[in-house]
Image (cartoon, rainbow over all chains, first blue to last red; front, side, top):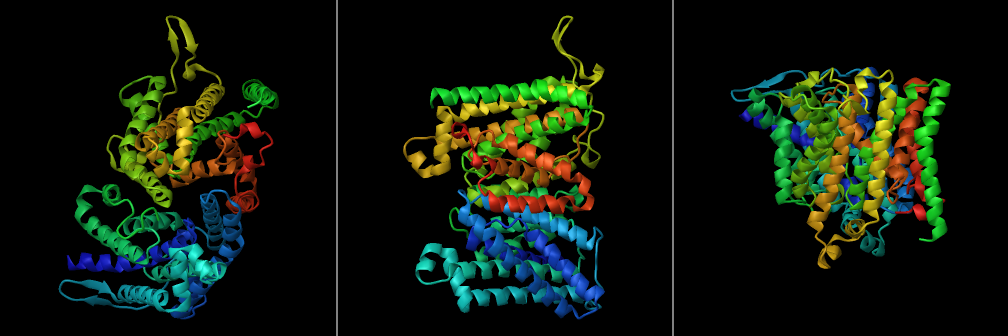
Length: 288
Length: 327
């Protein structure tokens, strides 16, 4: 059981990071970023290229992933989402744009990196073995890094000036603007930050599970589930949702193993019942 | 609405019907491009499913779960035909009704959600439908169901109202007429629905549910009805697709299809009843035409979509030359 819980914790830390980026973008701009999973895949491939192909240190590869995705995110916000949001009658129109961007990334990733599953050499060798727990060192490192990133993100949002501005924006866009917050600028920073988180997780996970061009869509769906569990647009909710889904997956795979591949079916059925009781998730504002 | 506008609309309708039932088959027969029948049939069926999605948009919900109902309808039809030996024609309404019944059960809790929450739940629903089809024994898992017989005849005594599809030389043409007739019926019904009292009530839901509820609109009933109609259309179109392909797999309708149904509505414009037809036509033909570009197909297609959104964020019919067409 310790093993199952440790796996869940490790998985949950990754998931929480993915959900954080998605929820940040959603809370700032009311945009459901369909391309989030694709950004994750892109981040994974950049790390793969820099670390495995060019042979540079893993940390540098990770930074490359984060910076590239941040730049891409900022450009997408400035030149695509901002003009469309300004001109469309219903805000749902941004979903078409987001879906188109997801397709675009899929195509670019497929053309640039091919359809093969890619893995990188281990970043740390060896396995931690004790009575109840067996855990490879590289998994532990990635888990610790993910938790450190979550902590850094929360501190940034809590205490830095951009963090405060973004929280104000998420609470009330109009009021924030009246208080002198540069709305356009912080929307862009927020989108870049969300994309950067997706890229960083992609880079982290490529060291463990590898990456291939087809997993973007499924990752997005998982991220949506986490955000639904925790409540859309709330930082705490995204983290809770990530850890809960990670735990459920880890426990479900062990307990339901005998009945075949029905873990996700069970999770979804549970989610429906949960949403019937609490439509806006654990911590969400009513109607996001 | 003025009389001249009404007559213009009637003229457009007549021209459209003439085009799809007479001119298009004639052009195809003359040019020998019989593959186009299949393409156009697909467009018609996909636009029926998209019409359902459009109706949920009309009550202010973003529905990315139509693929789930299309898959469900397909499986219901396939199972009834293969295992119960029912006629294909009988399974069509049954598949639709089954999907509508399921959608009432699912809809009661999830229709309380709004905006992005509803969108995300329905998206996950598509994935769940696929997983269920993989897990249930009756659906035959990943192997799918194959060699489903073609639709049989409908008739009394010796007189066949609809011929036996299996004995036809060109079942493609028969399916073309079938789906076009259904598409016209479906959009005619949608037009009536939207311009009826219920349609106005639905519009009130889209604008402000609390306000509508406070002046006595039964919003729970209304949105479940709209969702059930939507799922009925999804199931119907899925069932016919199975009839054409004679096979169904858990991956027959996936998340991509669900997203495409939604894109069809966006592309045509959310405020216009006939938007889904135009959106589906453009999206499907655009994708088909780009096939020649090989590996760059998706790249060009998605770039075009992005540019389209930048130029016309409110859909194609927002260019609307006929003001009267506005729903």
